[in-house]
Image (cartoon, rainbow, N blue to C red):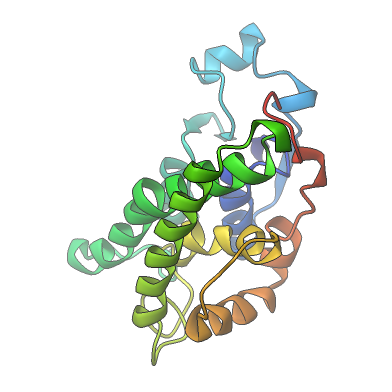
Length: 215
């Protein structure tokens, strides 16, 4: 059976669990990281020397790094819907995955979510937060243009392209922050909210993270 280590409120764990849910994979979830600990034990470090979550063990195959896990699960368990053997078509999906991780996630998760929500009010750098909000607005406007006339990032069905970017949406729309009008992104978010796996694994309350820089 697939085993997944991580805490439910972890952004990167949520990406993995959302795909696990979409694929309907039988699995065991082991809470780890943050207040759960475990990730600093010898047993965990033998799986991931960086001591980070998520980590999976799929019948003896251990994988860490969230996007590597997504690709592994899709290749092993998600054909044909989540994994295309054609490298050209697959690159259409993977470009969005990489863009989300290197561009959108640093602006929102690090700059806004950490800078605003996870930082105690007295320690907030509002200049940095506002710069990150402006960057987020630019990035989400790109998504809004791409989503015009299509229900999902790569076309008419959910793919791996949607998962890293779409995992941001619950927090982005729940925070008390300024956001531009994004009709196509908002419609995409409404479609994602209709998916049971998204509701279960991404729409997870994150109150425990408020003002917590050390969690």
